[in-house]
Image (cartoon, rainbow, N blue to C red):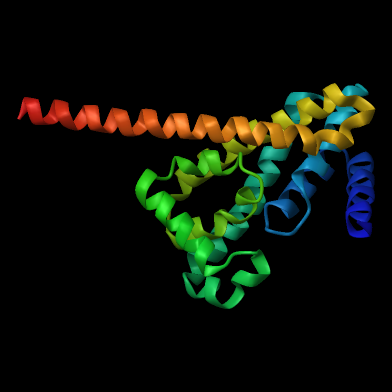
Length: 208
């Protein structure tokens, strides 16, 4: 609890003193697999939006850019180090071989577009970039989907915090509700995607 309190205090001072640069630094740290919850960074930023001291769109944009910067660092470590990175250093980034195998399975099956959705899932979003580098996902696609997914995540967090105002600390409760809705949405999208693939295959068979 003291660690969390210290993190909140540090992030608060960072953003108050450095404004948007503080948001960028905080989100870069968070997406580099260093435990600094984005809920805190965007929560404080959303509170400043509520006070009229920051702009919601700029908060989300800078947060997404910081997220992309930190994610790129992890991506490059994975790209250059390959699978041995997981075996040797995975524990420092909270990535076990089991987690890596799960991510590999997801992306082998559903493709790099899942990078977008990975940015909307707490915990997963903080470690997914390293395995994607190891899997050699195209950086252009990685950057596009990471940025867009992070932008959606940041604007949701900051907007909720701006609505909560001085009660922004309750943001985690709302995010848990959002997680449930997101899981339902992901399942629905997977079903639609599978149905579309089956339909496309049937059309190809008929035409041939």
